Figure 1: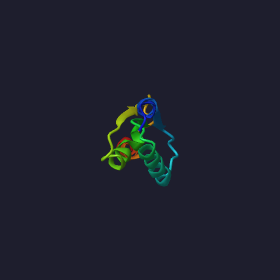
Figure 2: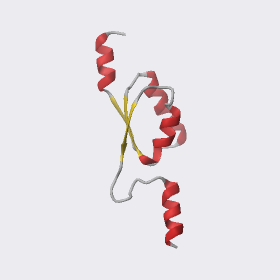
Figure 3: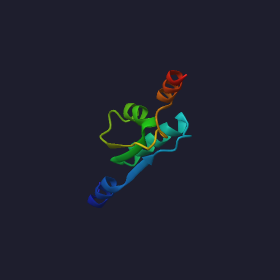
Length: 86
């Protein structure tokens, strides 16, 4: 690998925040991250655990966006919050 390729891969940043992203598309995105050796990934809380599991054997800097107020929480948490409120 040329030095310039390495430097570019360190600077390229993948962002996966689309709340309507299907599981298949998420897996495709993770495969592309591995294929192009992208080292920086940002995501929302919705995809954090799935991306961590999918990229577990791959060294990556994983950043998480937390939106305010409660707009991007995991669906399971929102379901529990609604049940608690009822």
